[in-house]
Image (cartoon, rainbow, N blue to C red; front, side, top):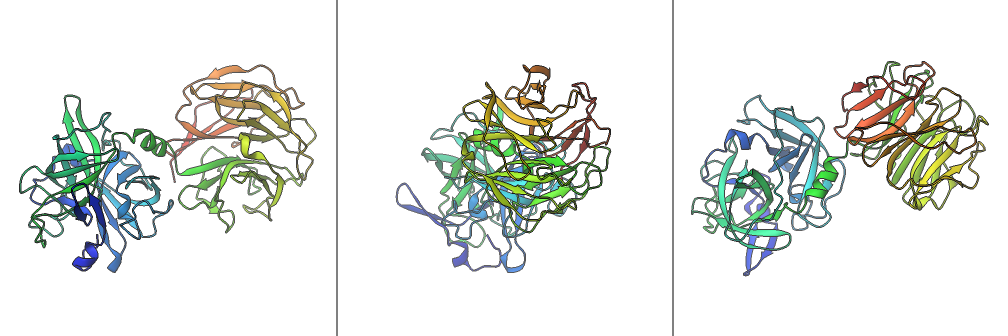
Amino acid sequence: MSRTRSSAALASALAAVTGAAVLTGTPATAATGSDALADTQAAVARLHIGEGDTTRSCSGALVDRQWVLTAAACFAVDPANPTQVTAGKPALKTTATIGRSSLTGTGGHAAEVVELVPSPDRDLVMARLVTPTPSGIAPIELAASPPGEGDTLQAIGFGRTKTDWVPGTAHTASMKITASSDTEVTLAGATANDALCKGDTGAPLLQESEDGVALVGIATRSRQGGCLGETETRTDAIATRTDDMADWIATTAGRSWALLMTATDFNGDKKADLLAIDAADDFLYAQPGDGKGKFGKRVKVNEGRWTGMRLLAATDFTGDGKADILAANTNGNLYLYPGNGKNGITGSSVVGSGWGGIRLIAAADFNGDKKGDLVAAHTNGNLFFYPGNGKNFASGTVSSTGWTHMRMITAGDFTGDGKADIYAVHNSGDLYLYSGKGNGTFHTASKTGGGWQNMRLLSEADFNGDQKSDLIAIHTNGNIHAYPGNGNRGFGTPIVTPAN
């Protein structure tokens, strides 16, 4: 919480606890605990939120090289309603400092938080760092089972102590579990000198076992007994359980900075560019290609947000020689955005409806009439072909079946025969080629590779200008991988552009 606000403001977040106790404030570090050990402190984050009078601090746990897990209350306008945190870029500028033995030092990693992903039902939020931590800073492992009543956990945070208002290092506190529910654990200091204070909100609660140290909870509220400036003597606290949140944490961390991506020559320089909707602000950006597989500084395509878009594809749909964008919205509509050939669009129109059951799309001229077409994988596993007429699309026809387990598709001439093919990534990470027949249907699939399970977005584009279809993919770590095609079903070593 803010270190410049009144005591009343700092105690504004209230939460009922079993036994009629009421806990207040945002925990920050141990009241009189010892300095944290280097191996655990390395993955503990100190969050500096806001500037001037709005400044406040929280703690957090590095759970992925680009994601910190902390309490949603740290970012809530009303800390009493921590689940009401808006997803996206934080309203207040936030900097995370991780792996630094002293906040006045220069080691570790400091990065701005550029996106928040709140839990829908718990006082938890995932905070994405603009750049990942160095490989030497290891994330905290998640516990696979819940802690039990009577267990003692170690809390580590950057909050106030018994003697320091703003300590320069992380401290520990031993907290014993006194009760638990499906979502929270109630704690008390293991000794009179163990407590959580203001600034410890978001502090990781760790449990040691024969398998090592694991994260079981995130501190959210505390009575702050024994903390500097407090008259309270009780050390009760509450933490949100994390042992059963592994799937949500993994799914969130598995995302990269881009929500959606496609690639095409969007600025008219004969080099393929990257188009991506940023997860932090929902704007569509174009990153110019250098003709060798790398992508430069991005520019905003238009001033409107692309909120609600769930599918993206690009090709020349209108036949004017300029690449256009097609996007499917959560409302079921299909939107066409004609490109101006200079990194922008000239408007939009609805060119289809009822696309709620479509989960994958790819664009190319599949029937050889020089007009952009679509193929779309339905939730029922069928692949549909939608021929384009330059303005919209004809009714779809079933092109093939059995696409249930494909999670990414893209289209281009990968075989060099002048007909559009499809490359698809299976849930297993295997890569399959469906060579086109030139009429919107395809030959039986052939497996051409594997190991693509860490790629989450895929597109075709000729990024090096050799007239052969290449693949561009965004890795779960956010890096852009450009695979040069050889025109005969295969690809060379990828060129990597680091995450923006």
